[in-house]
Length: 478
Ligand code: GLC
Image (tube, rainbow, N blue to C red; front, side, top):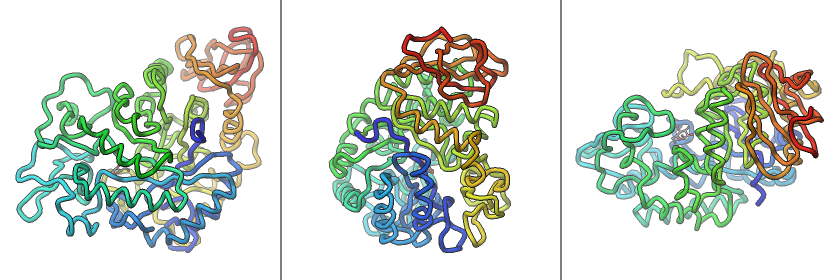
């Protein structure tokens, strides 16, 4: 299976490369930049939604599942992109948003019975806060996210058939798989009963009001597997990676039909060796983790973990066993953007979505027009300046991508002093110091890669640093 140890690069199409000077990235722009991805050494690219959309949730509110939004280009542009990617050995994945459509999708008018309605709201809340119900013509429709995103009824066979048709449409055009959006929200209690008061802790961060409830009816219904089987039926053996917002102990029904699920326990773990270790231990108890530390919803490595830890965070992401998702910009250590006067995303996620920075010009090489969100710091952080600098973050990420292919089989967490996360892959030992002091670390003889020059000295690992060492004889004799 090609994806088993693949690195999948997340492109936020609006912000990757503009080719027509309208300040918004597009498919032709992505095509122009494919050489960067091939040079970097990733296996595939995942495009956040490119479908027609009124953009209340920037493409996660789809108004046509079988076309490309004019802002991003055309179906022909998509076909060209897939072919150009294939020529470079890169696969293209799309974002599947099965839980809801835009309220501007013709289905919402023409097939109201494909959606979920109630005469009165229950206590379910939307992911962005507030009730998950909005009134329309005397009834309430369900929206697990923005009111502009109406939830679909996956127990309706006509809807399922329409969705399968859309899935096949892209597979036939050469799509290698899907990242499946918000899949734990696909099926809810058919009787629309209230969520009962919370019992056991949920296991992942929730809003305060959500945490008071056991989220057993508003999501993750027992027959979810039946709907997932329909998705699998339509895509054949294409890769399906689920955005399952559940702790890994509850992945099993999803992994019967999907190939992998995002490891949210790790994504939410603070940069602390003990906590990272616990999250990794829980998640690797069973197969199926897809690793992710940053994306368009949560912000970038540099900002999430601090600039001093970002290189070690990249090392962690790229040396765990299983597919890893790398968010555009993390390869150059791009940070989150400032809050701008103009707000596009009401949920406050604009700052994770500023344009990619290709060179040191004022636009960062992203556009010759006026960028929809300004670049963050192109002079300081850009691809061109880092490409030939062996000490740059870009060089580190590229080295990691090459190294990961030879890390070796197996995965084992190993004991280490407080502040140090350590694990073994084949003959390689990986150690990361999350603390502010240098620490003794389990190291093997040969240093293969350090996140900072001279990070390893006399069996100790510098503060904030990570290292890969190798030995045929095992750990401890550095
Ligand atoms: C997922 C997406 C997020 C979107 C939401 C609703 O969580 O990653 O960006 O807002 O689903 O589709």
